[in-house]
Every structure is written in structure tokens, then in C-alpha cells.
Image 1 (tube, rainbow, N blue to C red):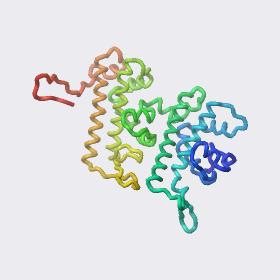
Image 2 (image 1 turned 120 degrees about the vertical axis):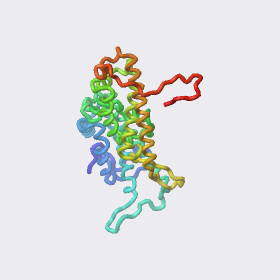
Image 3 (image 1 turned 30 degrees about the vertical axis):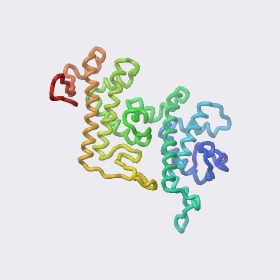
Image 4 (image 1 turned 60 degrees about the vertical axis):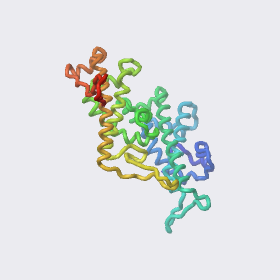
Length: 332
């Protein structure tokens, strides 16, 4: 496999690699090339889309280049690729394979297990952070990168309230992990396509997606709608996979005290899983109740919603009671 955004002639001594990885790099181009090509296909093309990726590939291999936007984008892509390539093949690069089996290349420079895991974690996080930076750059430069509008990411983002890793992380902490966000996107889409229109109507959901979020009537409800989507997506993930979102998938995990040990998965009882699923589901519904309460108090601002709900807009399930001088308190 031959990478498209790195050249063998530019890396006789890993010159391009060293530009984007500020350590002593002695890996040959031939050793790392298959991993870079794999990461281009697996991680970069889904972000940029085929059209834009092919455009920057042609530019990178052109004899004459003078496009500041493309130069910046290619550098960002190379930065992401070199880190993701070293991360994905970190263990393979440290061994030699022959007819006699595998042998260790590390010799006297062998790392402790916790050091190896820390380096891999750092490479992975930086690589996926770079992919998010590439998305932001393309969005901000979309008029100069019209091919980006054909990408799956751009087309899907127009149909979603939770467009980026940051959107999700601002509501539920996932350490800004793009891997977690990608895994949760299935459940986000499910909530947005099935549950949200059930509450608000398809026409009103479309109006909200196309709205100017700076308008007060939208800025008052969209943040709560986003919270509803995220918490309900988590509840659905738990219900379907019996797990919670982490970088290793939807799992429960604990870090053992021994510094040489890796993150280990701990089984969780069905009763505890159900408790957590219910907790997130109820939290999501409370946010939706708040949205509907606000809509009902300002009907003239939301005619599209009332076309859907009419006079039978569902009542709030939030219990309100004046507890003044009362011995019994109701809370929810």
C-alpha cells in the first residue's frame, strides 16, 4: 500500500515524518507506508470526502503549487496521519517477523508497559484531535474548499443538532474523544430521526435545524434539545449494548492501581445497568419537558410546533408544588 499524502523521495531519512513528529524518528518510509495508507483510507477520507481528498492529492503531487489553503490543509492531514499511523502500528513496528516467528527490536531500550501505553494514548489522542481540527478548518474555509460540501460529514452535519465531538463533550464528558463520538453517532441519529420528531414534529425539527441560533426564541430551547438528544442517546446505547461510552467502545472500565497494567473492563450487574439507563432516560425527558413548557408559554413564536401538537400538546410531567410551611416536600 502506498500513501497518497507522503512521498518516498521526500523521506529518504524520514524528513517529512520528522516535520510532524518532534522526536528522533528513524523509521523508514517503507516500514510506515502501509500504515499511513491504511489511516488515509480508514480515518482521513471519511472526514474529507473522496472529492476533496482527491483534490488535495492532485495538488500535493503537482509540479507547481501556490494555494495557501491547500498547503495548510495538507500539513494538517500529514500531522494527523503520522500520529495515527504510529499509534495503529506501534506494536508491530517494535518487532521483526520471520519464518522463525516474531522477535523484539527494542533491545536495551525497552519501555516499561506504562510508558508504552502512555505514548500510544498520546499519539491516538493527538491524531484524532487533529481530525477534529481538520473538520473545523474545512468548515471555516468551505467557500474555498467547495468539494467539502460533498463529504458525508458535511451532508450529515446539516441534518443533526450534535454535529461535532465538542457538541457532545460539552454536554457529556468524553475527553473530547472523536472515537467515542463516532461510536455514539449511531444512537444520536436514532434519537434525532425517531424520538425527537415524536415530541416536536418533523416540520418543526427541520425548522430548528435551519434556524439562526442567535435568535432568542431558538437559543432558549435548542440547548435543551441538544441535552435531550445526548442523554437519550446514552440511554439507548446502554439499553442496546449494556455499556457506557468510553474510548474503548461502550463499556464500563476501571484503572487498576498497578502502573504497568492497562485499563481493564469490569462487569456490571444488569440491575445497575438498568438503573443508569433509567437515570439518563429520565434526565433526557426532563429536558424535553422544559422545552415543551417553554413552547406552550410562547405559542405565537412557534406556530410550526402547534401545527403539529395543536391544542393537545402534552402536559409537563414536572411536579411543581408550593412547599411553603409544608412538612412533606415533592421533588423531581
